Length: 301
Image (cartoon, rainbow, N blue to C red; front, side, top):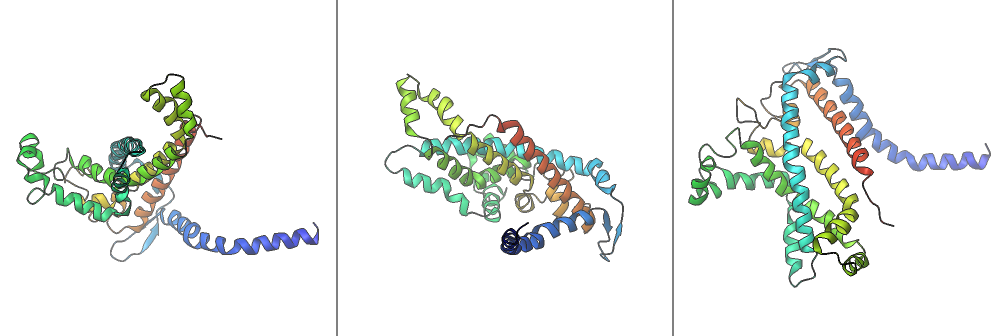
């Protein structure tokens, strides 16, 4: 190797060193530390940890508590991701029209981006709280859906997960709307004109032009929304506390690991085990999404 190439490699290494240092300090080291902690059991009182063996990952994966939490998490994903994508596409298509005053509606649809999970959850808690909630004191709704008032959507084991899912969909709707709107504005208008000349109606233009051209955005949005749904915590902590008990119908994998009053308590080892298992599940699921739907994605020139 010539001296010039060695000098260029040394310069490149020096330029990469700050990024590598930050990546190691805030990503690689915490990940490695979590993997190591995942094979230990820690006392909630003394905080002393002892090795329990790498088989602890398999034991937790096969435990009924983790499997129940995983089922609840999957249900939450199925309740939020398809609905969030559908509403995001519908609102973006409606707001893509060149009509007077549409800018106001675009601002309204994107407003949830500036709303944190905590604020969104508290807003829905104010709407759904049985005694003082806005929706629970509407006679028509109470007569139509008695569960709104007694015991309450967030207190009933059959509706608590759906109510929390509604809060999550509303909070993430602005994010999906912005992505889909950007995708719509990047579609060449001559494609619609050609389809119109060929006699395609509005529905056919949407299915044959809009959806194929939006496929990269939809794939990205689905992966991001799925990851967010698997990692959701604030909604359950503020709205349901993992309950209603004893069914624990909103105890997701994330809440099982970090929620107050869960069975693993202050055991940092088991928390790390669950966190790493969740990381692996998300990694596999994301790869499956890209592999399964990536072939159907059409990238424009």
